[in-house]
Image 1: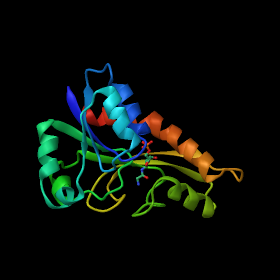
Image 2: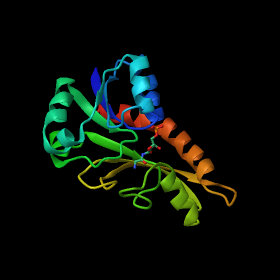
Image 3: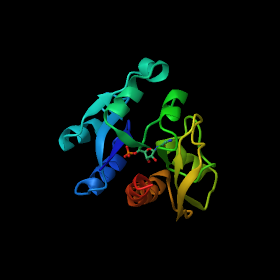
Image 4: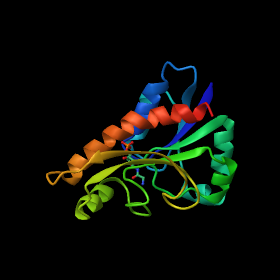
Length: 188
Ligand code: GAR
């Protein structure tokens, strides 16, 4: 049984899909959820699911090995960023080489980087007149949205689409693919 640690700070819909996917699995389980935002929806999910949740303190996150020790304590095999907006510090990247992944709601390298998250991404995609968007699942390094791509999946954008309808299409792709890719990587 492999252990997944999820970092999330939003509603947690992707975290929920991953939890559901592994609920009756013998391949892996969500062992712990780390969150940097008090009151985030993902904390309610953790509580309802009986999964330990830890609120991240920024200073300790940036300037100590506190959370590396925590992840080791949970014998973490894979760290999954599911709507986590802080850059991952170098010590954490080094402690889990090739074992931290992120999902981004666009086709990187377009529409990535600091400040490009959630609706900002979809607004930028519409403003640029793109005819497609999608998701990127990638390994995490010390730069925003920069590590090697694991999977991209696409959706069509029509002239009738709005940031909201694009968000909907992209979220459907996230929910379809993220748990599958997590499972694939656990067996590597
Ligand atoms: C997801 O759409 C994810 O791709 C995005 O945050 C959302 C979290 O939703 N991540 C980023 O924008 C990272 N730059 P959720 O809390 O419902 O899973």
